[in-house]
Image (cartoon, rainbow, N blue to C red):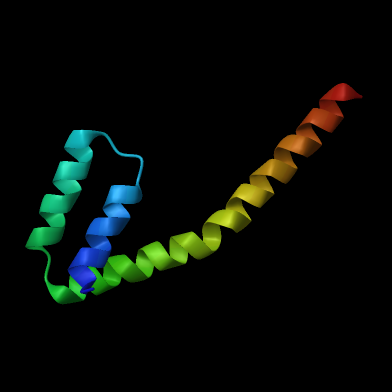
Amino acid sequence: MDKREQARQIVDKLPLATFQRDRALAGIERMDDADIEDVLRQFARMEELLPIVLGERARERSATKQSDAT
C-alpha cells in the first residue's frame, strides 16, 4: 500500500461530514509525496497522544465530580 492510499484510509476513518471527507480526499490527491509523509507522521503522533489526552480528561472529570459531590 502506498502512502497516498494510507492517507485516504485515515481520512475514511475520521468522523467527517461527506463534504469534509471529499475535500480532504481531494487535498490528498493534490499533495506531493513529502506533504503526504508529513501528514502520516502527524496522524501517527496524534494516535500516540490520544489515549493520554483522553485519560487526563477522564481523570479531570472524575475529580470535578468528586469535588462537586462534597
